[in-house]
Picture 1 (cartoon, rainbow, N blue to C red):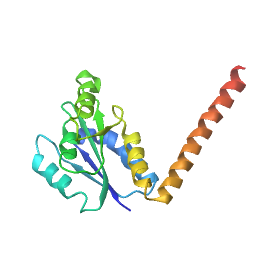
Picture 2 (cartoon, rainbow, N blue to C red):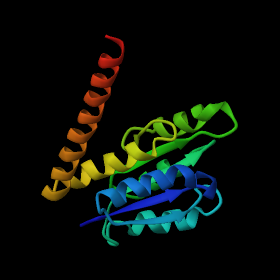
Picture 3 (spheres, helix red, strand yellow):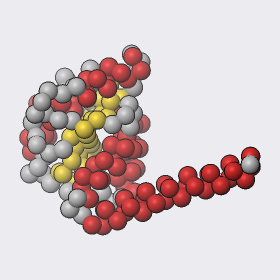
Picture 4 (tube, one colour):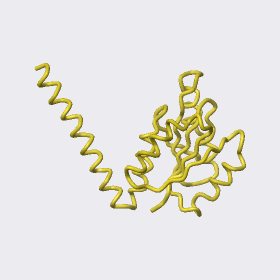
Length: 163
């Protein structure tokens, strides 16, 4: 199975990435985590993205806040799918990071999830990998059914309580 590369621009993004990691663990998806800054360690980011395919990565998740250029910098140097997680910081409630991540030039796409969307980033990575992995596909279907049942159970509880 291909691995998921997880990069964060700073260790301050770790609380979000921990949710990403836990979701990948729930699906038994292998991953590797690094702190590489697009601005402070651009050579490490370039090295990682340039070699990602040869190092058995199938998807790369990048989390960054403020001037969140990490996902774009990685996407510029690989044709593997790149998923950006814009992280909320003290400035602009994460809108700066969201726009920095989502506004990419034609030809260099970055799939972007919600601000602090670590779980959805992992699920999107798993969906991408499940295209060629029936076991992952089945696990995703089970997760969706479980999520559906949880909502229906809450509906029954609320209906019983108030109707």
